[in-house]
Length: 372
Image 1 (spheres, rainbow, N blue to C red):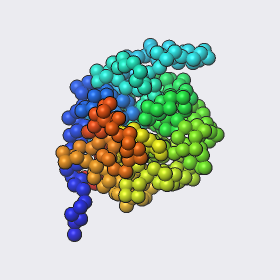
Image 2 (cartoon, one colour):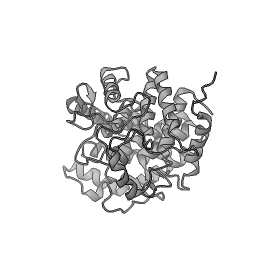
Image 3 (cartoon, rainbow, N blue to C red):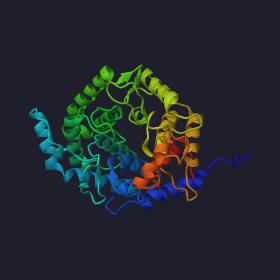
Image 4 (cartoon, rainbow, N blue to C red):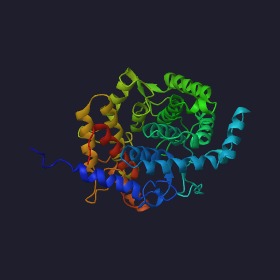
């Protein structure tokens, strides 16, 4: 007998692809959240996972448009990237203005924002991974992307060990586990696809991957699990991506098991949902559908189907009556409820719809074979 309290996955799946394709800019860029003033930009990290969802969900043309936009963003900055790479080869420290930003306007321009946290590296590695996934899935042509891939490999090989902001645009003075994981995942993906070899940078990718692995083994673990940043004892929800989908360590190996255990112990909730990290105060420090999607994705890949379905159901339960997914579960088990009003006063209500939340829901549903 059907459960009367079960979420309506059919409606939310249809709505999710509508949210993604309906809000895509004519340029191909995806806004992080069209209704949230400071999220009306395109992040390569968010957008790459949104494109992965579109690629899986029957909207390959939408994913194509995003990847073409991303490639143009990079090739338009070829001189800037080459300058940075050359400076590093000379043993110099590149100027801040030579670094690439983490977000762009929907037209592909730098935002020009002053005082906005803007130096992150994870999005560039994530884009390499998402591009190769999409091209393999749909037998796409590598040729139009080779120059952008070449530039991205060079940029990451020159920058990977540089402290920068993490996924959450915090702690700019650290080298973060999830950032290293995204870079490694992207470089490994372009090697496996043959794209790195086609641009003459296979050895550069291999050497960088080996260097990242060595750094993680030496300084990136605590008590057997991946750490929030080098030398940290803390776990972070973003580290789940290092396991699935990036595959930085064997999915059934001791580091993966210890990392999942630490997440389950510290920041995952028994009924579903995952905090970013203990002590988070952003919008009260709630649980994120995006992270529930990553945890569920890993569960699905490691045979824990019931646990993955729990995360899928939990994400669906956070949707509004209009089937829109927020950035954080609204007002549920906040770590710092007294901090919620200050963020609402500063930037307005919880960002809704967050395209990345809809994307992770679609990806997890696809992994589990849940269809409209």
